Image (tube, rainbow, N blue to C red; front, top):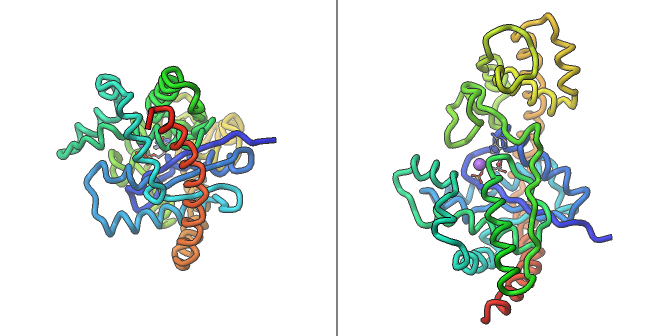
Length: 328
Ligand code: ADP
Ligand code: NA
């Protein structure tokens, strides 16, 4: 039987992915290799929508790929590639831009957030979600594993696919977001009212997967918890403790109710002490494996080149079809 297709991307805009990226999205990437025909890309074209340094970008793209492999992506089971190595992405993006309303794009809340934070606001930052639509539609993806913050962009992608299909005849699969409810938004450790984010979180609010175990322990132990002392899952009233329970439950594969029972009558300190070990133990081998993938750059280049070739074959077919539909 033909497996459903999955596509997702991640920006190489930091020196490491963080726990929110993993729990919200990358964990699903790894799982979906087994059930889907999976395409995953390091979206370096997206990374230049904010100011960047060329040498750093090149380095971060490699670290991102190495880290994805370290997390368990297997080039035998999925197609892993770097977006800029497949020229069809910006080509389809242009076509989609010409079918996107200016007002429609202007409603994207991520653009509003990012443009408020950056002094240099480019047209590329504005059209970012349309490039994202091209990424997804080129591969005829059925499902797109992402965190909750991507829901609005995915809605735009669906609208664009449907609009194109209605106007020109069926061309694109209309994709569905795949968002895991429990882990779709991991909160900032220092400010649990907002999400963990590489651009908005301070150093004590975010845990990078490549971080030193000692620093990880320190951050978990100083995580902001809530008033009261009961360890119960209640995201509304106890966002700090609930966030810690979510992280614990997912990384240790223990249901939250079981954790609540385990820590009944105990204090936040006990929970944090154990969670610190869970997170440190989870991150240590990832950092180790990332380093070993980076040590063999020839092999890494080979994996990415093979991935780009496989991706290109699919993307070129879709683009040719779209071109024909358009009248080129
Ligand atoms: P982008 O700028 O492309 O959204 P990010 O690095 O912010 O890149 O996000 C990469 C992936 O991680 C996306 O699928 C996003 O939804 C997810 N993600 C980011 N932050 C969180 C978080 N705090 N909780 C859950 N998922 C998250
Ligand atoms: Na994001």
